[in-house]
Length: 279
Image (cartoon, rainbow, N blue to C red):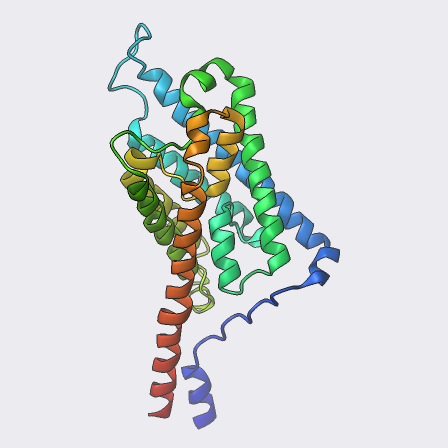
């Protein structure tokens, strides 16, 4: 009876850390299927969201007859497009690739030992290629508006310095990656297994909220593949001048989130569990 009670008190086992380098995954079809899933998901993400941005700018262009400055989906609608697409795509791909759809998320997962070095690098490549192809589809179907309204490229807004933009990207990405770690925690998954939509919903809302806060500053990246894909296809000087912000900021934010979750929150939880067990 005592043994049974002790087992009931145990927390669910955490996932074992992934090997730093795991060359065997390169021989598995499941790994390449995951890469395809990341590529397609990032392509769809860029296509829908960038098309939303360009459509909004076209609908509110004061130089076009019949437009309304208060028309279109607005910043709120753009934020919903980004957050909603992340919710949908994470829900669709989580069981196949983990549903990263973002090099910063992949980097955070790598630091948290959720993915190997080879896996992280190839995920990022697939995501960036997907971002390029997604932005390329928008330009192919709507070339005039694409070039006229900035191609949905991330650029630092007038009135803000690079430090402010970098800070916005760091904090925004921290919010996203912290949410990803918390929502996909194995202990939480075991407890909330009856709510399979919880993690994608939380992650989508994190993206939505960050966009509301930082669209006026950087157009909101928190995703290097999103910024890189649009910069490659739009290919204007301003987009490339600010590109470093949308890589350095998200990677720093992801690293801080990984450290905070793995070495502060999780470490504290382990100590707390051990203390209660000793009692």
